[in-house]
Amino acid sequence: MKADKEKVSRSIKIARGQLDGVLKMIEEDRYCVDISNQLLATAAILKKANQEIMHAHIRSCVAEGLKTDEPNGKLEEALNLLDRMIQG
Image (cartoon, rainbow, N blue to C red; front, top):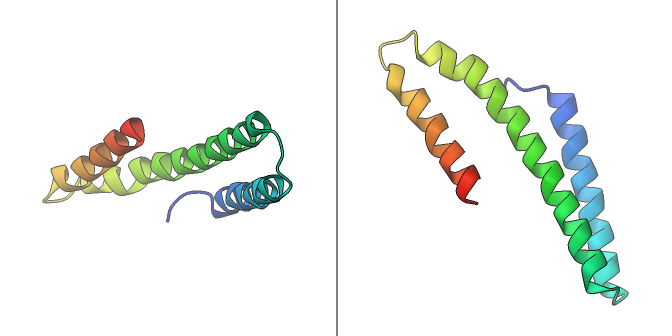
């Protein structure tokens, strides 16, 4: 992985902590909207971590792939993943 591992790891750990908090909220039968807001915040952190990984992938792996014999392979792979991110 070419992304900043510390930055991505920190984001994932924060998201994990938030998920633990959401589970506690569910166990405590907390207000639905509060739980939903925490889930949205967690999803936003995961999305940002994924964007960091994809940016690094495009800057390194895709850029390098464009210089090789199979320039469309890495590019198509990245585009397909971006499509899944947009649809998801």
